[in-house]
Length: 225
Image (cartoon, rainbow, N blue to C red; front, side, top):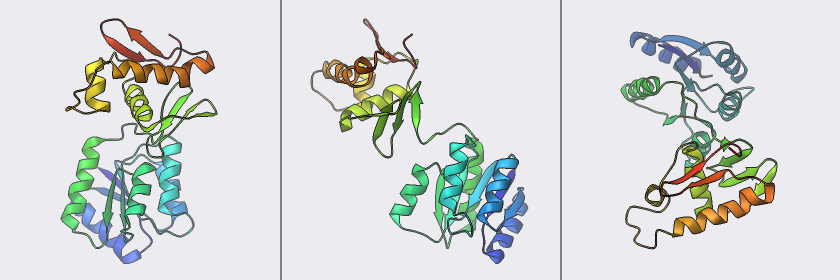
């Protein structure tokens, strides 16, 4: 397992390298954000340990750039910044885990192994289908360059359809994921919200991305198939 540690505190960086090597990791070190970003781009790693407060380029920017370039190496943020806002921002821009200093070394190793098991699967912060895009964290959606004005429930339904794109999902499945298991209202509420979505993201743009399959449910496609 190959790890990249991006940490500007030399003693901690050296300690991390020694400890991770003892756990079977091959470890590269970067002491600046610039070097860390270059190494992450140029080499294939199983996991990346990333500090936030780095010289030249901070950890937030490194994470955001890697994800924008479709580099999906699992990233664990290791930082002294423990504010909820920092954790939320890091996870929203594409980090996979967040651990604050001081930390238990055994916990760090366990989390890194969990990330390695998960692998470098594609985990974009912004999801989409064709020219339809949705940012789940910011709760915003676009058709091409035009931003869509959607309610919270419409955004939730759209997110579920995008994540299930190409798959037929039944009304019951939609209710369970977009509403909740205890919903006891009229199941036809799904039809109402699908109609609202079509009126906002399809019809004004000459599209028909949400397909109805009679007796089965709905399927979202990337184009007009």
